[in-house]
Every structure is written in C-alpha cells, then in structure tokens.
Length: 282
Image (cartoon, rainbow, N blue to C red; front, side, top):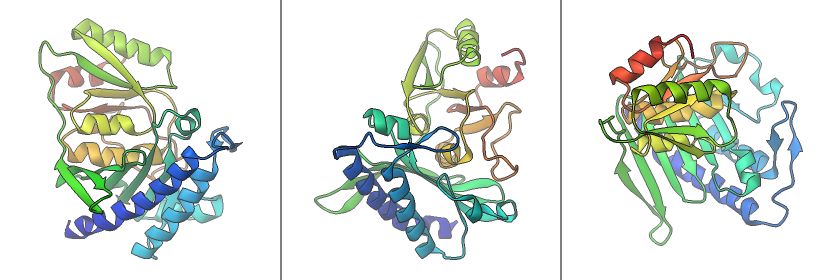
C-alpha cells in the first residue's frame, strides 16, 4: 500500500503537465480541428500529445510496466491479456466535450493489478484539480495552488441516501436511450423526488465521490479506460461500481476493451440498490 501512496505525488505532477498541454490546445485557435478514428470517435492533437507526454512520464516511473492507453496502437497491445499489472490510461476523456467547448473533460490514469484498479486519478485540467483514490485506504481531492506551487488536499466521502432528499441521478450528456429512461422511471416509482444531472466524461465519478450525486447508470458503450480510474476513486470514497451481475467491474479479462453496462453507486449498501440489482425487466 505504501508503494501506491508513493506514486501519488509524481502522478499529480504528470497530470498537471498533461493538463497544461491540453489547456493550451483548448484555448488556442483551431481547437475544433480533429479526425475520426476507426470507431468514429474524434481524435485531436490534444489527445495525441497528452498521450505522448503521459507515456514518457509513466515509463519514467517504471519502464517495465506496460501501458494500455486509448491511443495505443494495436502493436503495443500484443500479449496484453497476460499483463498482471499495468497502467490503464485515457489521455483526454471527453474529446467531444473538449471540441464543444463545455470544459467537461478529464485525464484518467489507473493502475490495474489482477484485473482490479488499485489506484486511480482523475484530473480536471481547467480546474487544476485531481481526484485520487486507493481502494481500501482513502480518497482525496487535490487542488493545485500556482502561487505556492503546492497541492491543497481534502478527504472525499460519498453521501448516504436520506428520506426526503432528492436522489441525484448522474447521466451522460450525449448518451440517452430507452434503458436509461426505464431505469429513471423505476426509481421514480420508489423514491421521491428524483433529479437528473447531465455532464460529460468521467466527471460523474468525481461528483459521486465528493457527495454531489447518488447514482450513475450506464447503458451505452464506453471502454475500460473510461471507468477504471473512476472506479478506484469511487470505491476509495466508499461507493461501488457494479456490473448488471452485482459484481465490481474487472479489467483486461476479454478480447474486447468495451466495458459492460454498469451502476455506479454512492450509498452502495442501501436496500434500494439491492432491489434494483435484482430487477430483470429494465
């Protein structure tokens, strides 16, 4: 565990450098320039340059540790199913939000051991704020203070569901479907009131971890680099990220790198979520 704690400071500085690079692109003319990848998701210079910077920084921490990034070429992932310990990275999560100018994008870094995230960092470049979690130990929010060149830290903890308080459901700004609407309808039959809050990228995990939301259901495609760091932060703050089978998500277990549908839950022990997990008609 002490080894993981020792990684936090260098990872914070690495993400701050990547974030500064991303912000330079975000505020520069021509930010809207991009090309499509094979899966029709957009790719910008901010994605590729952040990825190159993170690759160098992570290799400097441990040159033997493999890196699985959203922008890794196929040749770099040969034999990945045999990796027991590796970095899982999204150098710019929320590229569509970056292009749309909403500011809702993050840098995601997770350390995976035996298919589980043991350390996660979500960095918000525009706010110079990081959410860091080590499951079983603690979760913290770090904010960079430019004048002192230091990080200010405070502890994170999920909130509990309380009768009479609105249940805040976090959802993707760009992904709406019938299953999500059915889930919201199910909740409204059992809890009053229910409010929906939309945002992009991994910010929803940050909201859950800092007590600003209760539930994030996902029924649309996303990949393992979109969830791993958020899972570590959420679990460390007292929540859970569960598949439809009620088990925590696992990583690098399949040929595909797509994540299954999931429920991200703050107060994971509440009976409402046990009832939802038992529901098969959604």
